[in-house]
Amino acid sequence: MFEEMLQRTDEVKRDGVTFIGLLNACGHGGFVDEGRHYYEMMIREFGIEPQIEHYGCLIDLLCRVGRIEEAMQVVEGMRIPPDEVV
Image 1 (tube, helix red, strand yellow):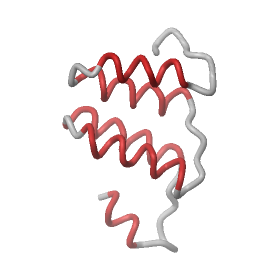
Image 2: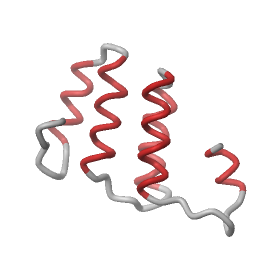
Image 3: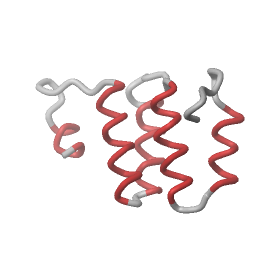
Image 4: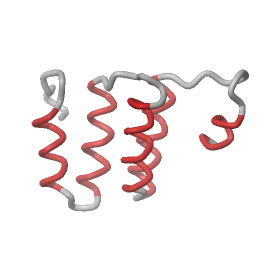
């Protein structure tokens, strides 16, 4: 669905909430590489600054597949303080 949204440049707004849903779906589907790609796309192509929810989704995505060290690197590199969920 997101790839379709990319084709419809004027019709569909992509914002932070869009990426929360996308990252969450990647996490539940086990699509780690795709989730990382979309996370980077969110920042670089759409200029969306990650919020605590985005970080949480990314960390969850990594932890679900056992990439704990990588998840810890994300936590340590966050631009905002982690909350109790993170």
